[in-house]
Length: 194
Image 1 (tube, rainbow, N blue to C red):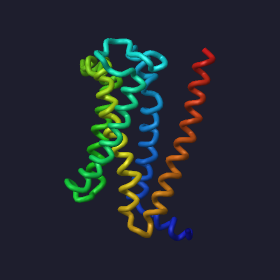
Image 2: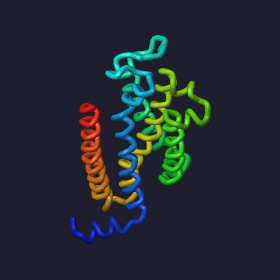
Image 3: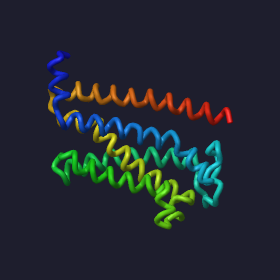
């Protein structure tokens, strides 16, 4: 690749915005997937090893399985749905559905966190079924956005830049993953020394 091609790619404001968005979304995605069972344990919903619910779960599979399935199904359906919504309702425009799904992802993540205390909707996320539904919804929106950013946006930049754009965005996500792995190692190590 010639430096001129990189200058052209990095000269695109749309690409820079998408690159920042995919970098931030990688932190959200991996933080959610990595720490959700620890969060549910802190909320006294799941055992520390994720093998059992600590509140009545009426025949639900153990947290490891239920949350894993919610992540998978949420991500798979979100990726397909956002692409379809982008193509059919927004005529392949990427920004409007990305913004809508980002707002919805904030609501879904908020339903798991401090927002439940403010709204009085604690019943939603503080039950095993509610937690699984919230994780599914969060993954639907988080991973739906992630799929669109990783796979749809590079093709929007044209055939000449699609491969380079995909490579640069993958590189940025690997930088995030490396820094997040280091932070996770520090967090886990500091917890084990207490």
